[in-house]
Length: 459
Image 1 (cartoon, rainbow, N blue to C red):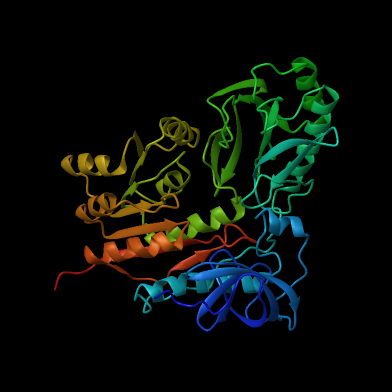
Image 2 (image 1 turned 60 degrees about the horizontal axis):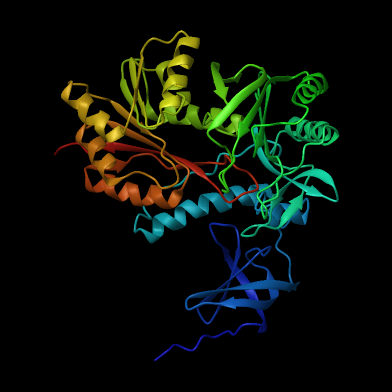
């Protein structure tokens, strides 16, 4: 027999918010049934309008707030919540940090790992304007080239000039570039008809170097008035050291196409991270919050307990940001990454910093671990910093097989971290220090963590 749900669509009711989801939505319970709603904080009593009901949970809209949480702050504007740029902007920053700590604790509890301690979240002094990279879609609004963002889960475009969490200079450069392109008759991309020229503007800025890269993502090879555009952008923005055009002619929501050409300046910008120099190209994966990345890597190195005598494997090394940081404190670092261009960058970055105790390889980490093991390489520390989907079971098994003393796991998704910790524990590893959450993305529900696992001593 079908269970009768305690709520129906379009019903209006009063409820108290009891929790926040990992996406930052308020949770109200009606006879054990969860209703998720935006802009609602724990402890607040609200009037709700039920929008959608499913078998196990539903969605509702707050029509009136009857009480207000002491952690509520005035947001900077509706658009930042609607687009998902800053879904936690209505929550005071100290409370955001507590929320992220609780997020990790709750997941551990669900997995019966409640005995694992979670430290307070490492936050930022200034939790706005931190992103060193922007990729913004461009559309034509009232005949004018306009940057903005799409509403969550839709193709509705919201114009924006201040993106709140981006470096302020990036916002300024976007507006100057748009004005120059407008003047030179460049049309905006039209998704519906797959016509027009300009799809996105991508801007990167060095936190220390202040160097700026601008990438114009176009549907066509041809850019009208190219010479004038190049001259005007370089004159209007003297800090732009790299101006590029990326061509993406496909009907897709992937931002960059396969072909990129330099229109002026260099192919890359340079910047520093913990005193190391990096060359960052248009496609480089480089952490977007430089201030917090420095702290994150310092904490990972500190927790790894490097003394200068260790052999380290970095299993997702990218362009070498963490490998190089660890190489300063270790005897030898082996880095592996599946993206060939990233490894070319990693080798270049090692040379740039005169570090010769690193070896970088292209391929699957599991395959290289097997090869290194055959070669008799015995790592003291294995470092993993995987994408959101976490580690594969085969990588976990390959890492455990090498029997390092420590595994340092930097995670950008607590759900997959908790799953992977259980696998490591089954293979003879224990979490030996409190897990440290680091706030890489203030005003959003994302949280990074540093976890250290150590091999159990044989009795």
